[in-house]
Every structure is written in structure tokens, then in C-alpha cells.
Length: 334
Image (cartoon, rainbow, N blue to C red; front, side, top):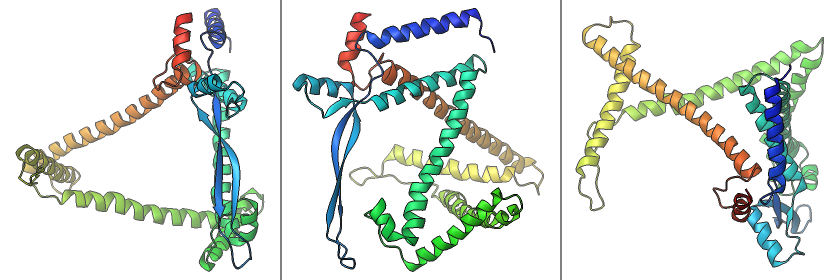
């Protein structure tokens, strides 16, 4: 795929501006961290004859650049707040991927395809690692080999009961059978654990949806048509009572009209037809609100990425007051 000369010039100009911005006006795209001492208390275990101990380590939390400037001004030799090479490189990689995704607005290109493949691969790897450390280690290995897990990575792991051990043994067997999918001749064995997983998941989802959607929405319609609202003195407030009553009436009327629209045993004429048309308006408003909420969420994601580029990376804006000195010096230099 060949880029036009105009786009090559624009890319070079943008790269030059980013290079100039990186070395003028306080720079940009730097991440600073502060060391924090973290400790957990490991209780004593009388059955094993171990005493109570404390495990300590040092964690590094990201801090605004002004915290680093203040620490350097107080003591130039301090090592509590330092520049982080790893997080800074990660910040620049995130900026590159963000711009590569935005490049699809022009047209499909190798940078976008590379970023798309990296995001899919990293997401799959992250889900696998997260499942290993949050499910396999504490639940499976924690139930089958608790002493090994406590001494290896989770000293605060609680003891598992016999029921948990039996359940994890059953889960281990299902997991091993599921891996038979990789076998050319034993692939049919993986269908049994897969069917069990799908059936259990469907059963749990049905129960949760009935409780959260069907029952909750049915209970929401059983409201008094006249709702009394009281003020701080206990007297009935006029306007809040009117608005609350109107809201309850609209909810009940909307449910009945929407059900009438989907009731096809009676021809939609007369009073039934008018109720069905009102139900259509309720449905249109509901779908429109849902679509608007979805668009609003996507716009919020876009705004967050643009703010990331202009705030965390380029240091052109400072809405949270993290770099007052750097932003003002940049504006003065420009």
C-alpha cells in the first residue's frame, strides 16, 4: 500500500513537531514513580508449628511530575521519587498504538493491522495469565496442594474444605478432557466437558436473568399510582408527590401498552390498537435511549484516548494540575 506524497509530508511534519516537543517546554511523555513499603502479616499456624511472620517488599506507585519536581527541589540526591524507564516506554508504545488505531480513519494500513493483531494477542495472553493467577493457582492448586501454594506465592491462603477439594478434582478432570480437542483422534472426548460447561453456564445465566430482569421488572410495575413524598418536617410535599405519581403512572401504562403491542391474539383495533400504538412509542423511546447511551459510551472512550494523547503523552493540557510548571513553561517557550 503506497501513501501519497501529501500524507508522507504530513507524517514527517507531525514527527518533527513531536521531536521538538520532546525537548522543549519541559519535555513530554515522562513517567515518575515513588517507592512505597508494603507488608502483610502472616498468621501463626499451630498445627504446623509456624510462628507469625511479616512479609515486606517495595512497590512503586506512579506519581505526577510535580511530585518529582518538588522532591528534587528539596533534595537533589533523593531516590524516593525517580524516573521510570519501563513505564515511560510503555507510555510511548500506548501513544503509538492509539495513533495507529486512529489511522484507520484515513484507510486500512499496515500500522493499523499490526496494532489490531497485537491488541488481540495481548488480550488473549492477559486473559490467560489472569485466569492462571486468579483461578488455577488460588482455587485449583490451592485446594489440591495448599502447602506448596502457601510457601510459593500465597502465604495468606485460607484452608479449603473437603467439598472444595472434590469440586476442584472434578474441574481438573474436565480441564484435561477439554484439552483432548488438540488430539486428532480424541477430539470427540472434548465434547463432553464442553457440553457440561455450556449447560451449567446456561442454567446459571437463566437464573440470574430471571432474577435481574423478569422478577425485578415485574416488581417495578407494582407501584402505587399515587406516591406520597414528605419533606424534612414530615409534611406531604406537593410537587414531588405529583412527579412521583406521574412517573409511576407512566411506568405502569408503558408496560401495559408494550404488552398489548406484542399480544397478537386480538386484532389491533379500537382501544387495543391505540394502546399498541402507544406501546410502539415507548419502544422507540427505549431503543433510542439505549442507542444514545451506547454512542455516549463510545464518545467517552474517544475523549479518554484524546485526553491521554494531549495530557499524559504530549503534556499540552493539564486538567488535573499534575504538571503546572511544565505546562506553563511549554506555553512560554512556544
